[in-house]
Image (cartoon, rainbow, N blue to C red):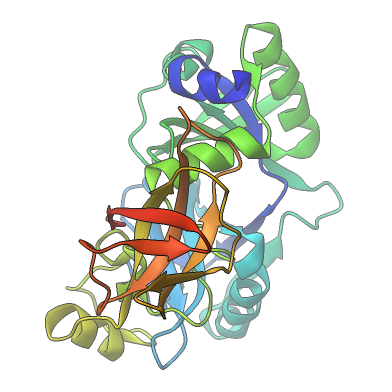
Length: 312
């Protein structure tokens, strides 16, 4: 629990080897992205955004974090959506005179190091960054790109060549940061109700089901693939299922397990927190709109409680 405690009350260092990094450079990478993403890229030189890539039917191919780096744009995506993001962006790039690079697979690969928790700001010298806002910081062996993070735990993502990121990690640990591995970070993510692509969000999902629509979409922007479905679900319809924060006590449910009510499957578990918090285990899962949230929900013999739909 030391890593989890550092996330909540100290400063925790979290490595993210599962995330992929792409870079767009050239004539107008932001313009290219605005034609295909659910959200608009801000015009400010140091402001980014969270967005999705959809197929023409409105299903989610990948979710992306768009980060400004000078005239270039760095894209962060989860491993589950990296292949689709690279393929889709690579298809549009030549027509927009934009160059696409896979920074994660470069000769000198880039990587991401998270520094999260209430003491993170002091360890980095006090950069005051809103979510997705960037600044360059001098690290032990060079400069890194620091990006503001709001969820699941406030702090920063440090992005740069892996050798420099490794030196920055050692520096932060020497100054008192605590290493946190997958289990505490995943527990904090699920507790906060933050979906992860590849687990809680897949190509089978529409944005309106995930609780991410308000965060990921700009309803005033121009056309993009899948926009009609997104708008229709937002303004006129109700998704057949929605992602919920869940909690249970006792035997942990397994990812993929059915959620049962009155003998019928009304949902499915998508993520389960690795750590128990005060005897309670948090999870994420989809519930049918026909599920009765006031009646008991079961996974096996375990009673599951809905803490409400995910809203980010």
